[in-house]
Structure formats: C-alpha cells, structure tokens
Image (cartoon, rainbow, N blue to C red; front, side, top):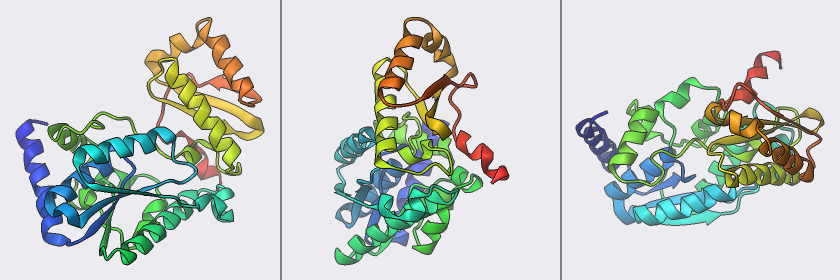
Length: 275
C-alpha cells in the first residue's frame, strides 16, 4: 500500500472517531491494532481519549512493557488496571468459550472505570479480518456495546500495519501476541503456574534469538513449540536442541516437541470440530 493510500485511510479513521464519539476508552493491549486505534483517538479527541490496559494473569510481561512504551510515544493518557478473570471458574475450565469469559471480565472492568471517570464509549482494535475467525470474545464486545472503528471501515491487518508505519508506531511490524491462556489446549485447566511456565519458556526462547514463538501446553504436560519455519534448523541443531529440552524439563514440562509445521496462528482451534 502506498503512503498516499495509507494516509487517506488514516485520515478517514481519525475523522470517523472525531465525528462519531466524544469521550472514549480504548481497550489497549499495545499490539498494532489497538495502537492504531489509540493513536487515531488521541489525534481525534485529545484528552478525551484514554488507553486502558488490563494487568490480567495471562498478559505477558513483554506486552505490558510494550503497552507502556507505545502509549508514551502516542502521548495518550494510559491507565493499567488489574483484572481477575483467572478467578472465574468458567475461565479456568478453558473451554472453547474461554475468550468470552476473559473479554467479559475485561469489558466489564473498563465499563466500570469509564462510568466512574465519565467516559462514554469503549473502542477496540478489532479489524475486519478478525470477524471471519473463531473469536468468542466478539460476543462479549457486543454485549458491552464495544465499538470497532477498524472493522467498521473494513480495514484489514495490512491496512492497519500501513497506518502504523505511516505514523511511526514502534509496533507496526510486531507479530500478533494473544494472551498466554491461548497457549493452553482446550480442556486443560488454566492456572497461574501454567501461565508462568509458558511465559518463562517463551522468554527464554526469545533470549536465544528466536523471534516469534509459541509454547503450547497439551495434556500430560506435553510442550509443543511452534517456531518460525526459517528457524527450525537452528532449533533442532546441537547444542540448541539439548538446551531447549533441558530448559523445558527445568520448567516442569514432562515432554517437549518442536512442531515441524512451524509457527501457525490459531493452531489450538483445529480441534474445535471434535469438541
């Protein structure tokens, strides 16, 4: 997409927010989608826009740090509030509707904060591509009347990244980073211990130079690592293979495997037709 095209779409996004809303709270993860919405809201509404980040148990520490950095670069007011979705038994059970329970907790917390501080509307970073995926969190968004300006304008991920690059946002090329609970196979209970082990494994792999990884937990403490296909050779070569196995054992995983299909978004959803 050319800079002119990106500029036109960026202007349309800012104008939509300026004309449709007055005081908004952006559900802000620090990823590229919510960053673009937050930046557009700040351009459109100034101090009448706030970025709101959850400090839930399944939010990686790296994402929390990214959210702080991006909000600071945008200039928007940024609040970070603890949420307690992990205390909900329906969330812990980790059925296919886990994301619904998570987002319900998130949006109810944002709504309570917004009411207290006299903000009228919640905006999300949902883009047009998200509407075609399995995302039970969208029902929670609908329940809480969350608005999605990117999706409303038909903007897909490519458009969003183009706007982010145009505005110089540091997350323009950041890979998607779903919550840590999405790494746990459906039916395996979500616990703080499991979330912490997954985060520790991914952080360690990042430290070894692997860029975009997922540490996915299956039954019987089986760890399935998804690594970019271009990095598979490095992962299975010695001494890295042995180091990966040792680290996984140290963190308490019983078995460890590296998926030869490489890094694939949403791979845990393949089983949904069988549930």
